[in-house]
Length: 271
Ligand code: PXL
Image 1 (cartoon, rainbow, N blue to C red):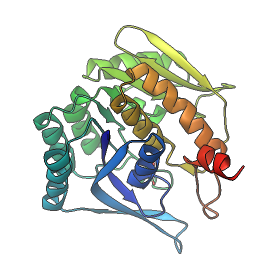
Image 2 (cartoon, rainbow, N blue to C red):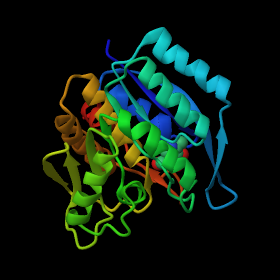
Image 3 (cartoon, rainbow, N blue to C red):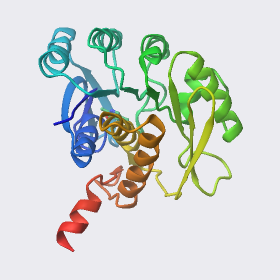
């Protein structure tokens, strides 16, 4: 059995975070494990506003011992880390256990949570984790933060950002333009391997309220790497996977709607 780990936050509502990661791992036919960094909750009495409760450092490190020391993983991804000690511990364990197939999803905000969580934490994340990343998967906002570029509005800006982010240590950079690019009629993502650019185009879906798309995409890339795909092939398959998931997205309540990573399977079972 191929084993894959996520170091990420729990999204109590189930659409994002480690819940999305584990659902994705399941669809890829790999065994999923999770080290929980924070617990994110959403308040139904306050317009679904988010609260984030960090898991204490000793409990996080004990989980990392379980996952990497006790079991071992063919690949790992990180999502919302939330604290300096989680950034530090993630870097330490990935190095100690030689996890080369590491996908860094540089989660900085989640929809509904307002502005960047903590700029200094984002700097620490870039310094400690970009050099360990086989693939970094920023969205446009995160690419702006990581590269220092002011406003990325098209493919040229994405290319410039990808170069800067690769310069900070990521071996491959996958910038998710998604639905955020101006004047684009496709969901356009950019893949950079340090030398060449590939643009990946998909169907543009209306995703204004969707959350969990970034978590699902990075989990899918990690699972693809664990299964032996190249970084580019893993990114291309992840894009196909998230497009199918978002197409089958649904309303959780009046505030958010997750994708549906298992849509294709249910459709087939009950057809
Ligand atoms: O989608 C970003 C994200 C990541 N991780 C957790 C979250 C969210 C957004 O809600 O809750 C735990």
